[in-house]
Image (cartoon, protein in one colour):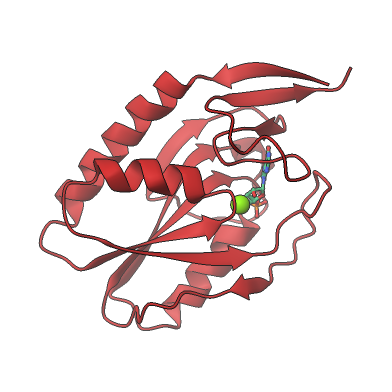
Length: 172
Ligand code: IMP
Ligand code: MG
């Protein structure tokens, strides 16, 4: 197996900075809760949070994903919900990638039932060709082709989340 760099850490950092600036502008004076989607969203959330120039609350939600396969099952299960009372607050869901869109559509609907002031989405990567459901990413990141990638939070069978760049897995 070989790993080829697709998106460099510099590209990720530049995009994250742009998005953090937009978030700082848009949520000025509001109560914002960043909700990272575990496990993949933890790196992006930590980078994004440090570039946002206002007070924020931080929480995490954990959902079932692909297991050890590279194909979506379409089934989303909550493994850990947020602890924060998000009622009346502005929620920004922070995800590593939007692929089919099933996970984020489910999460957006889940938060809509919690009485939040608003629910928006930030995903650092996007595979538009793979979309199965119509869902809007409010803070879009970097579009990539239909390839399985790892690094910057994304895993293959639990590994490679800690790679600083986003890499394509090439089976050899
Ligand atoms: P969706 O529900 O199909 O949009 O998938 C979202 C989740 O699938 C992401 O949060 C990732 O955990 C995982 N995923 C999608 N594409 C990839 C990939 O290329 N590499 C690793 N994980 C991925
Ligand atoms: Mg994920």
